[in-house]
Image (cartoon, rainbow, N blue to C red; front, top):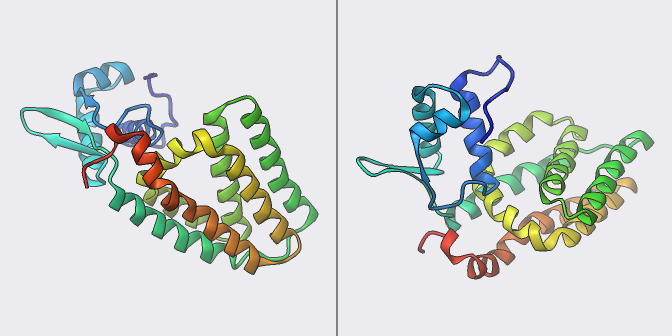
Length: 224
């Protein structure tokens, strides 16, 4: 881990939390991994108290389990939490896309540029970049609906889903990009109803892939 260098507007605990949250949701810290308060404080260049506080916040959200006298573990992926996160995200994003107005040429280009960069990232086999652009596309849809603040709510809720999405994007990038293009095509011709239907199917794909992902990564999942 790199030492923290986030803007000072965030507290040290916030910065530690954000760092660990990203590492967990992007599977840099694997489910089942043991976390050391001392090691993380040394790695990030902070005292142990903000690390302890971040562990507590992560435990409240179900990402780590604090075991007295035994240490702190990254929780394994819970299918129930994944499906709950997917439900919340789908409800919020589908509501947003209904409010997307007729797009201007500049707005269409802004979305097209994201998808072109996503294609380049896929060709370069750059998974982290592809995933970041995936986020940018969905965030932009919320912003175009005049609901940019909703994306912040989605980010808070979808962490458990992201761990599975990170696994799925490794072998479904082309499919995800094709689905994004379909959503943009529908919005370009003013078919928000069609765009909503495509978005719903796109977001729901994780549910259909979940059994396969679990079968291929059994050690990452909690027992049912």
